[in-house]
Structure formats: structure tokens, C-alpha cells
Image (cartoon, rainbow, N blue to C red):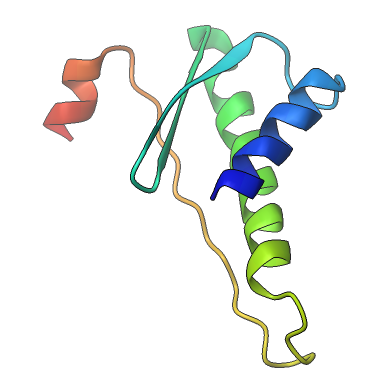
Length: 87
């Protein structure tokens, strides 16, 4: 997961990502991002794509074609921590 998060930050810092989001926490298998509400869908979709691709790169090193393991990432956004806890 750390490789995937580093890739997310690299792409953000290189200007390849929607602007205005920060990585604020890594909790078990969660990556917590903060952004403006108006950009939440765009940031979620970008992060999902980057984390899935980087995860597949990391997991499938030297794996023969046809035997690779897909990586899927779920993403949600909430206005407050209490909304997240209630879901």
C-alpha cells in the first residue's frame, strides 16, 4: 500500500492530479484524503485509479501473463467523520 500512496502523492505533486487534496492518514487498508466538497468525486476517482494501478504493479511483479491478481479499490466521501462512522 505504501508504494501506491507514494505514487498518488507523486502524481499529485507532478500536477497530474486534481488540485487541492491532501493525504492525511493511512489507517490499516484505508487512505484518508481531504479536499473541497466540490472536488470530492474527481479526487475519489483519480485516487481509485492510481491506487489500483500501483497496487497491481506492486503485487504482480514477475507474475506470468494470465496469472495476475487484480486490485480493486473502493472509495467514498463524507462531509464529516461522524458521517463516515455511521456508514
